[in-house]
Length: 273
Image 1: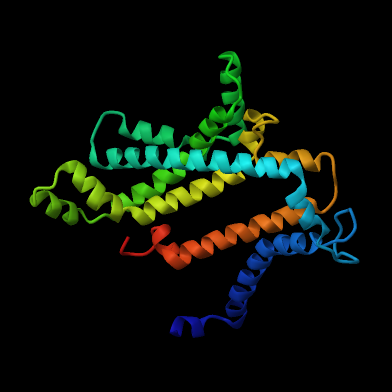
Image 2: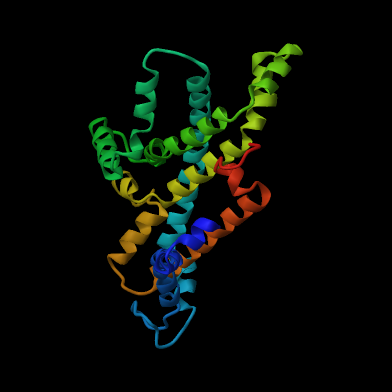
């Protein structure tokens, strides 16, 4: 408190002002898109002269959006599940085992975080083309698994770091087999980290556009790719309306996650996970 009072008045004012400017910088585009989505005219303008829900109705009636949403659900569901299984196994192995090349393996597994997504998408496109493999859902799912796996690895590994090994040791001392300890003690204790990794993998997969643009076809195009193709042909506020729907759905999912589990535990920033 003394330090705060000792600060000059301009510095005490600058802090809240800076925070307010940062919040405005982040939230202003969302506010503009939300208001523009209610524009009655078939053109994106701000502020709208009149308001309508026409473009929200078009979001749910446009065939490519429906197909893209279905494709995104398929790709997101499988890629997040596969990444969760692989990421959990790798995190446990890396944490519990010592082997040659451990750090190199971790660097390779985390490389999608620093490699541009278009590079991964283009590289995978070249590989499947050379192998004469059709760009089916399998290819799209593989691409997304590569992209979201680091998020699962990070989440589960941090949970492993905070895991109290005494619970596992107690179960083992009572005669539980290593496999039973894993499924009855370790996995339940890692549940917040597992859910957090899966949640962010699902969100990242559902939102992925750059790599998906290279590996999808008309039959497998995800919702972000369908949105890109739409904006190449139309300039109406439909995409603004779709963005509002997406923001609302994401906020709802995070609100439920926070209510039932707590984002602090999911993000591994609270004790007791």
